Amino acid sequence: MLWAEYISSNGENGIEPPAWVGDLKSAQDAYQTSAPGSDASITAVQKMVEIMTGELLFLGTVNAPAPIYHSNNLQNFTEFKTQSYEFYRTYPYRPAQWWLSE
Image: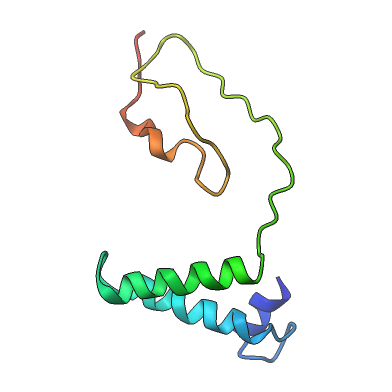
């Protein structure tokens, strides 16, 4: 949080992050402004993956259960094959296409 404060305040508040954070932000900005599937997009993603794996931003040590509950009245609902907060939990299963039978 203090890194974000530093970046958003142009260094007036917060704590200055390590140099790799700036590199990650630059790669993210390049990714967000490039056409999907373009060379620039692919290069930016590769740079982000390199930084995130090199700096070990996420340490997956916990595999906590996260049950999925639903009503049998919910139609077009498929069994989840993956789940996580980072993946926005239901996104790949198109919840906008579910409906109730009643």
